[in-house]
Length: 519
Image 1 (cartoon, one colour):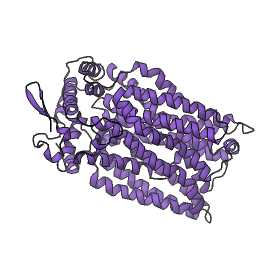
Image 2 (cartoon, rainbow, N blue to C red):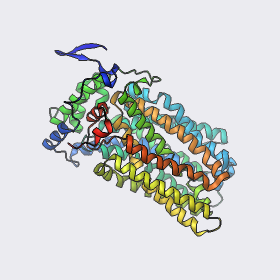
Image 3 (cartoon, rainbow, N blue to C red):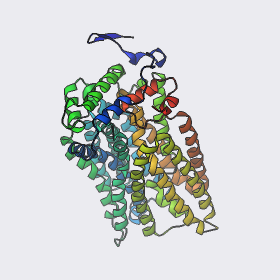
Image 4 (cartoon, one colour):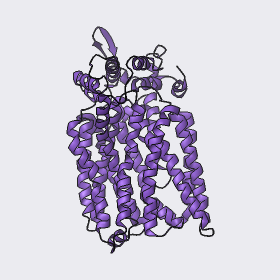
């Protein structure tokens, strides 16, 4: 235990203490009274000039999510094109799985150092470095002359995407106004569909070009660079986050940014003073954590750290192992349901993206209104039931062709229920439950887990569906059902709390129970 002096008060470095050794929290009731009082006094206007500027700033970070969306559905659509299949001699099986998984392999490699880039040089630098690497990868991929060339481009693209994906959500949550943090952060993952909508509809249009030319798939692959180019252009016009500045001893810069975007230009406003006070207190406590990129002991040091890390791990696993990734394998799944026309397959693939984006944006309001836990359990229940119906219909299709249409309908129902809650929650919940000093490192480790799940989920499905058919879906139905139980017993409710109050919840003896207490 180390001690120093802060002003005239003795300060104890609590980062090295387990939760049982920390001061009792009886007087620190996390009922967000301070924030509620300040917001009542300075009621924010979502259409004020400062908030409109803030929306433009965080939209630059949203483009990091669009980069990821571009790859997922671009590859899925390209793999259904005759021109792509002939050029690379691929039509399902392990070869298609390897091509899809090569992007995930790049993600896994990049995850090892993604948090360090954002922590050491800032969230803006993390987005910029990741976007530049994505640009290089997209060029390699679009110009591919053989399978090895394509795999190399996808690995590089995946490496850059995970660096940008680690910095982007951290930037959004740390820049968001506390009154609208849930909606603004949840919208990050919803912008995943900006990329998918553009790529899937371009592929659908190009499928009508006669002669199956190579540019049917080269053009969509090249367009994957678009979000990265926009980030690299606009990154120079947005500020670094206040929390990062305070964590690096530049308090005045943090105050000016908070005043400009949260305090309507007033550096002495109540909302600015409250955030400055709470961020400094939390960061002082957490500054003792190890900043070496490879050292994740800070994620496991105390009971509250371990609980946070467990929740982030759950988001990674339950958000990935819900169904084979439709962004890659939607065409394959509808073919198994009886649709074989290439144009129809690509149209159905294109339709999923605007439907999911509409569902994700609609869900933001209800996540804030109903809370994180109820909406997650509702979504997981709907997902499990949908997968059961999809499994039954896929099994019946060979003897009862009409069952295929029902299975495709429930595939869309699954996508709506998933996107309504899980899509925004995959970016919102982890940044809420991770403490400041562990946020970038925790997001990097979460991305590592997501990509480990993704490696399984991108390589195996075409092989498994080809060999065991509908039985493969039973795994996903069971895992979705397990998620409901885990969410009920272990997930804390973060609705209406600011980030500092969430820290107090995790330090309480019973975090789940404490989070459900009403003020």
